[in-house]
Image (tube, rainbow, N blue to C red):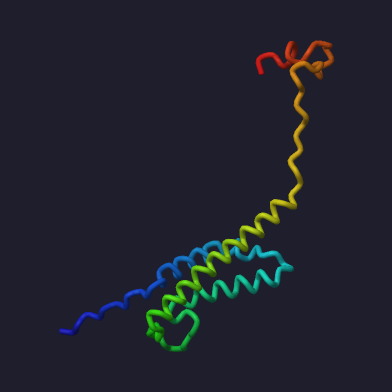
Length: 139
């Protein structure tokens, strides 16, 4: 009787990184909406996503014909630092996209509203009565 193979347990931070990268993949259209002239932002995104991807064993190296994920060689302290770097990278991405969204919202046309008619002003219908006694009744 052959012994059952024990599956590899995920490393510290690996499940979070896989989930984060899956969310990026599911919302790829939004990630592709990077401002065209923002080379610094593109570099920040590449660096930050690389920090997060580093938490997934074998995600950065692809060996042909090898289906097994490599065993990581980091010490627990090195792994802890990698997780900290990935979390900081996620915050950097959040701040970057908040600034991009702020700039997009800032350059939009202002909302234009018609001026309100005061209660004691003449009614715009031309009746000669105050607005509150004419069309402003019941408002």
